Image 1 (cartoon, rainbow, N blue to C red):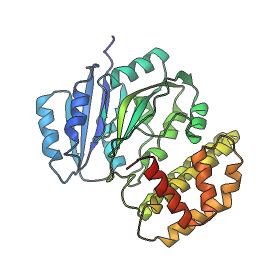
Image 2 (image 1 turned 30 degrees about the horizontal axis):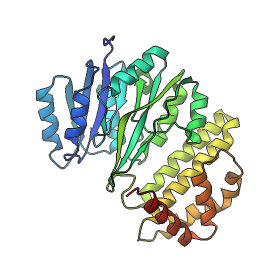
Image 3 (image 1 turned 60 degrees about the vertical axis):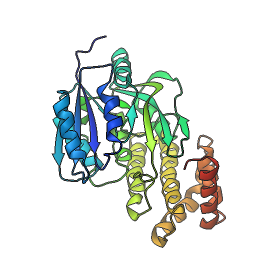
Image 4 (image 1 turned 90 degrees about the vertical axis):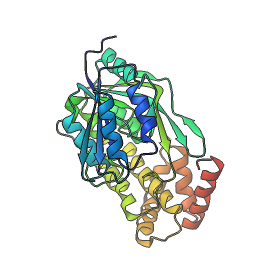
Length: 326
């Protein structure tokens, strides 16, 4: 195997002292050895800064960036800035990867001469439930097709992790500092900048969903960032690819439904945000329901809201219980 090309692995670190050891063990033991591991200590208040420094002493492939807290986007940008690799991949420090994660993505991108390689992943919940996202697809696609499938949630997601990127893609693209759900604001631009994208959907990444994670934390108006980023993506796609209008509208509807579902789990009331989301879904829902490619869960959410937000909350909580997500 040709291991001449350096691969940079960027790990943002913040308040993960209970999880970082498992993550780092999986990274340090990669079968592909020509890697640099960039730990970005984002002003972590726990023992992570000390732990990071210890890893630097133990393995010369590890380097650490200590910085003031700026959020996940800022941490990723700081890691990209010091990366020396021909390729970059991101791993969240409370997740972990299979030992051939890097080798698998590297071989995929090299064999296809693609600019981005996308692998599969597993979703692992606190409850112990595991959802396997592996589809065994092996294909090379143009950016427009990948965007269409992302918009319809058709086997390709917007996560920054689980992918390998050629370094040049980040020359003029950055993650938006201070915004939650930063992947939704960035990944589509990286995809559209690429010449071609290789899909090899075998799971090598283990995505852990915890009750205290950003996506599952208590609702706040800041969660509306998902809608903001998705609206930007939707407008971008419709302007460049007008024939993907329906797909772009579906993704925006998903952002409203997903954020409303976050609110549905919350005991506190946020009338302004509730009205904004319910008004949009009710106004545009019938148009989305006509699209045969829209996932059934989206359609069920739109229909259930017709009976009021109280009914929507009941159905969503019942769904979480039945599917044993938590």
